[in-house]
Length: 169
Image (cartoon, rainbow, N blue to C red; front, side, top):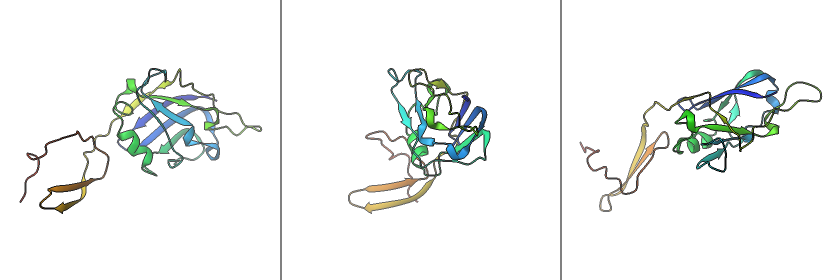
């Protein structure tokens, strides 16, 4: 039992996993999955371990879909990374023995993928949706503090000048 392929879809917030045989979804442990930006964790500059807040949305199958937006924490954390989920050549996965098992009695567990020899993504689907403003708040007209609330994380640069980006009607 092994992980054959994986696709990280940052547009929909899904992780697609394809295994060599059917998986008992009730045994699936999302927190046994870690992403890193290099094959060997010793040279990786980014890594992220999924939490148990993301959950599987497929029935027992060889093809497993993990909804990373279900708890939002995993999707938001991955969105904030510079490489992982943005470049196929910078998105690797490693998994522990207890990621999942099959239906045998006793069960066979998935073959682990070492953090020192992680598996490269089969494909990446980049986030193509622009962030949308969901709310804003002007703290005080004298201090000129404006808080913008968006529906997804964005990169904000220190001392960013947005004075030419906003038009007051």
